[in-house]
Image 1: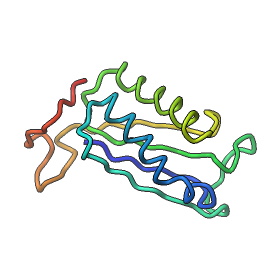
Image 2 (image 1 turned 135 degrees about the vertical axis):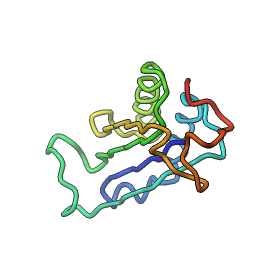
Image 3 (image 1 turned 180 degrees about the horizontal axis):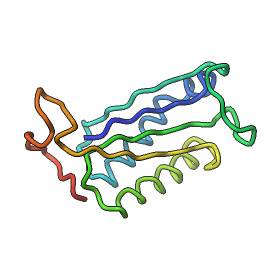
Image 4 (image 1 turned 120 degrees about the horizontal axis):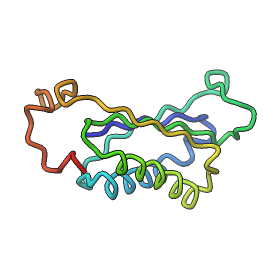
Length: 129
């Protein structure tokens, strides 16, 4: 299970949502071995007056937060971050300086879906990759 939040200026983010979602999802499927039908993305397009960032970033500045169950290896998480940087730059032309990514993890007993805690659910994919 992974929930992904994407923040950016509305004037930029609104124009790239479908493609950015596809890029993020492809990276998650490849690195985390997620089933293709498991896409949980939320976009937060923001007005300029609500989104402060350093002057050395452009209007394409984007923050990606990935919240997932704990259990993936350090290398898997690093691979996801590196792949996101590479694919976002090559597919969308957003410079790596304009992308920030953070992964946070929660123990399975702190993640709830399908009416249960994740540690009580048999998933159709492996978390320990």
